[in-house]
Image 1 (cartoon, rainbow, N blue to C red):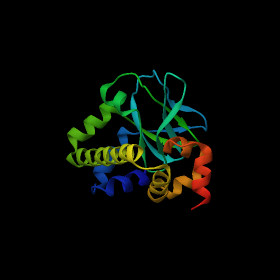
Image 2 (cartoon, rainbow, N blue to C red; image 1 turned 135 degrees about the vertical axis):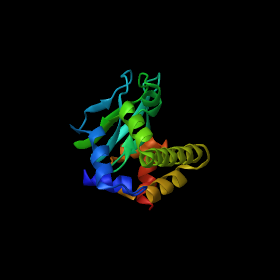
Image 3 (cartoon, rainbow, N blue to C red; image 1 turned 30 degrees about the vertical axis):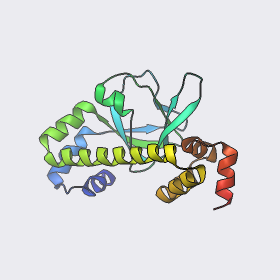
Image 4 (cartoon, rainbow, N blue to C red; image 1 turned 60 degrees about the vertical axis):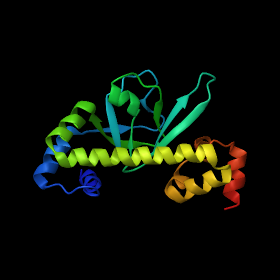
Length: 188
């Protein structure tokens, strides 16, 4: 749980007493490679913070094509946030790409923490702000950048992910075919 405390304290300090209380709201879970954390149609109960491992969130369109929305690695959060905050069924899938350990936080627990500890309300608000900002940058990049620019931005923002995730999935995330990614990868 020290890892969680360090993560929280990147944004706001917490006392030993506060952290002892905070950690009671989280449940630890181990998941195996290829195991689904969320499947389309599931009611989404939790958001997840990754202690170790790599996860992939994706949407499957009506033609059966997979569109990757997000990767999540150590110290990142992931969920189907639309379903989580609205307590509805998921429209996306989240699958484990390697054995992982995660911490689960229900919406009730999150809201209780935020209402009882202003520090945690601030923490959650800052994390959502960062998530929203990165999603907006990605959408703008998909709309306006060419494949080479998208790859270069991805490589500069997430160099550790390039080493962990198969090129097939990186290509899919960037909206290019595998062959295009191979050319871009070899030229850098």
